[in-house]
Length: 97
Length: 321
Image 1 (cartoon, rainbow over the protein chains, first blue to last red):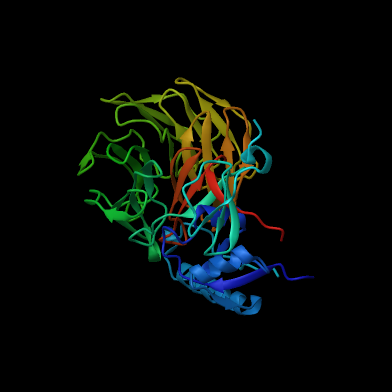
Image 2 (image 1 turned 30 degrees about the vertical axis):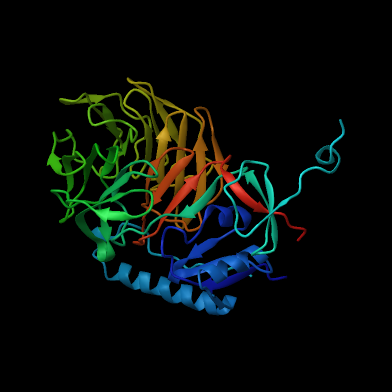
């Protein structure tokens, strides 16, 4: 299957991190661990990666970061008193190609 | 008389940076070497808003996309607190704290005249406490009759006219109405649920989603009773709510796992709009159907996202790719 997504890590600094023109021109998805996904081979998405100083990761590398963060969230959930567990235990997320 | 302009048209402007343009205007950006034009969006779009000062979710919220308040919340490790922050469309700043630490309160009003009602406080007990914000300080108001958390509310209501509904636990159908001086129990929801969405005003409110079980139900309030409306496309709880009964917005939410779906209500039915970049459960909402704000969520986060409905001016790039 052709790879359609590319992955990066970048910390969301807030206002201006994703702007209107960017979100209307290409699809941006965010995951645990400051992992973001945008279309591959897309000039506008690549410009955004440059703007946010994104560090490109392979899908496997991104998956490892997401897995580690989810595991961390699972650990927090496991160590939280039952009465303070406000959400189901986090579940794994499988990144797409 | 024939003119050069009439035969050949206008010359496309060559500019170093994108101008503030009218819809339909075309220009060439000599810095980026891109041909651009000013159009409008055909569906909703998302941008990042300012980050919260505290990584958190499951609070209460009120106001608009450019003037909101977020009060009470859960932070890491399931801790509840009194933190309150206000938003000016760009950044969040701390306000004086709530009197009672809580999560899962419900918020009504504006950033200068808000109410937080109910919730769960440190120690695990549901509370009936109400606090009022006047733009500079929180003061204790008249408590609701039944202590509950995760209620819905007429989020676009006012400090003198509002309703709260549902909540738990035990999961409730109860609706209470405030007339500026006292709470009274009024017509009950048809479907008991908590962690539900709420929009509208005291005489015209909307309830949607919630749990348990996870619900896609929506109900309309006419000032005296609830009637079932058309259902959400995606059942969920704990999304961000915004708007009024005839123009509501439900942003993201939970349904093990979290969903990124965004739906809008037109007074008759729900329809999908553009998904939010990062889904969250127990997130909070503010604003309107065309200018919404999604605040925090669980697992705790500082992220906020701003929703702009279709029809917004948007600079587009002419591309053959």
